[in-house]
Image 1 (cartoon, rainbow, N blue to C red):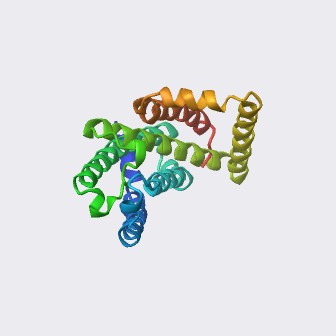
Image 2 (image 1 turned 90 degrees about the horizontal axis):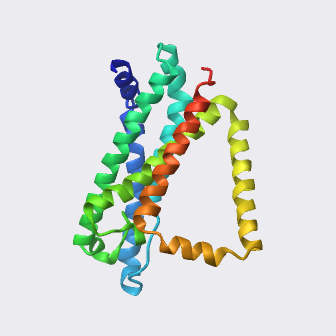
Length: 232
């Protein structure tokens, strides 16, 4: 357990990069959106207007975990940490980070609602259907997608470490083929209306909590399988 904790601490050896950069990026995005809403009056003209700027936090956190496996893993193995220990330590940080970030995002959403969207009608930290008006559920709605993004970052990092740029390009091409093929199949079967109705019938808990958690578990399993054959 001590070595797992050591691997967890290794992920936080540069807190400015691991924790600071994502919040700096999303903070800048928030400031820009706040200035837009305040100067142009978007919130007054269209109270239902939303911004997806908070996605910057999810994407930058994902990039941090890509770097964890492309840069930190070789160092960890160099100081005799096993792949399994590094993976477990990183998973411990990932789950903790998703929960803490969910709590912080829920708190920011509560402040946003209490202040009328920071005084300008801005819905930023949980835009549109992601705002569930329930602080406890908001933690899950904001935190579960974060865990899925982290799992995706770990998977991409392992793919890059194992196959190099060819691995990333292979995943990109495979994703285009799979999702493009599914889109063509849905269009050919004229199934978009049915798919839209099915999604509309699902609760926000299913879409924003259940599906991301399932995706995170699947990606974690695939990542572990790939990690076992990674060399420093």
